[in-house]
Image 1 (cartoon, helix red, strand yellow):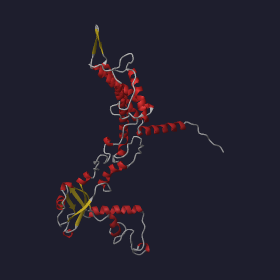
Image 2 (tube, rainbow, N blue to C red):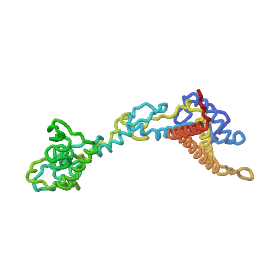
Image 3 (cartoon, rainbow, N blue to C red):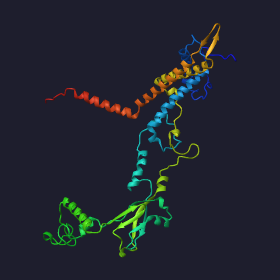
Image 4 (cartoon, rainbow, N blue to C red):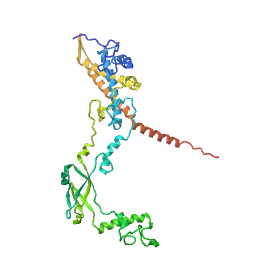
Length: 392
């Protein structure tokens, strides 16, 4: 086995010493690389014990720790702001140093589905169609109508049927036999001979509550005394009530419908395209880059140093694990590979958990909750302050 050199106690970082070179030309990264190597080596027992690592091993762990820190930070930023970012062009510049203000754009986009179903907007077209009534024929198959118009019956969804009797308000003005008087033009519109006023040129004003009650009376009278104008729609089979008469033959019976395929198609916005084109559609294509090391504050760097140490401890454990024991004259030495790997895994997990907890505590929701609590506490304290009574 070749005599591979181990940590000598000093090192000099040069660009190209890390596997990926993400931060090699950041001056502060260059300055900290050798300091971190010395820090980790001394924490691992050097110079009392040999550390079977080289400077490039320390640099590799340092680069990985910075990258993990950035990944955790920006993954949290993506989770925090995905609803505001989805749909932006992929060509949007890197968001590392961008302040993101919440907006209603995607919330409105999501809510358009309710507008479609309610018939008050949305992103799916509604179409009009009609069947021609035939006297004494009460049932009409809209699937057959769809087939005649080049539409698949399974794709048809009827949203509104225009079939109702005369509105009560029309009978209120022009009907007769209900409420005040009896005859053409009852209630307050065109009341002939009321209080000496002539027909149709003046108005008899009644309380609005009376008008509402009269409309309800007309509706109830029509429900009881007249034919109920209604319909039944089951599986695109339309049945209308009352049954059409011969006088209804040839009348167009109108309805509105949408196509289910368009509802599905219009719910998709393409994010595909050439490299650099398309839209942000998921967390994998949100434009965040690796962090700039020189912009990371002391809090972040302290975490990075500790994570680098845990990675170095893990690497040293794997190196020492190649030989579980080393023979010496009259005995053998057992290496601490298992202890190093176990400790490294525990420390890495604890550091990740601590970092995520810190991000949770500084989330937009947590900060707003803290601000609301502070306002409540301040108001409680002010309420205990004696109020000065001014005497003029």
